Length: 126
Image (cartoon, rainbow, N blue to C red; front, side, top):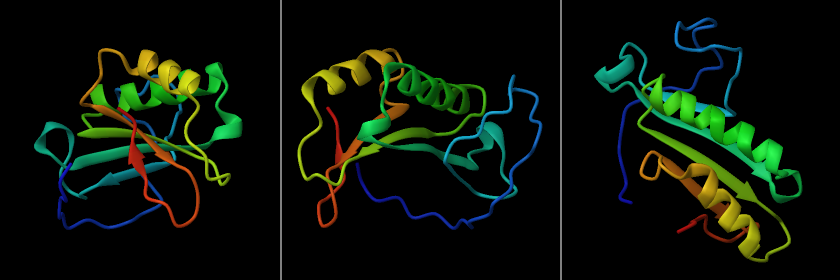
């Protein structure tokens, strides 16, 4: 992935009741360009961030469901599920396989990322 430069601003509020959102669900982060909506290209990234210790199958499925909703109905360009652990190790292979299964059919729209601790780079999970 290359670097994308976009003029945007950080804000704590989004539309409280968009038509496409069936339930009041908000991801951890939304990055969008104010004034541009939907397929016009203003909705850039939706992100869920989770510590490894809180990645039960149910929690991961809920997070991926949010990313699916925002990348399809909300027209966000990309969904990112970032999992981190400050232990410095690698993402357990079983967890990686579980995550790949959850995003099946949305590859290219949902990216899995792993951060193993301070001082290390975030890596995209293949």
